[in-house]
Figure (spheres, rainbow, N blue to C red):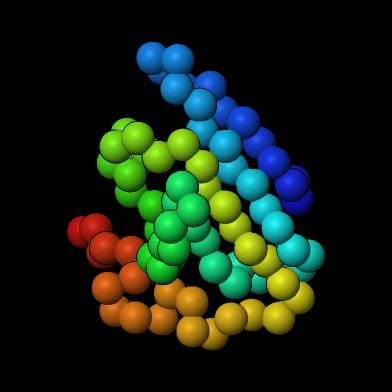
Amino acid sequence: MFEKATLRLAGGRTLVISRKGEGIYVQKVALDDKPYTSTWLPIEKVHAGTTEIQFTNAGEPNKQYGSAPADRPPSFR
């Protein structure tokens, strides 16, 4: 729905969330220009100093993205 959002965080930090490509399907995600394959983002990743989250989207789903068991979110009971 948006190409870029800039969040101002505590301590003067900034987090930029951006999207490249068209479509609703996430093809890949990068944190600070490094590939990130998980389908969820724990808040610890942001607290650890992440400054940019980049989404690449397309019109067709990428069925390989986030398909590994380690990439799935944890189950909370």
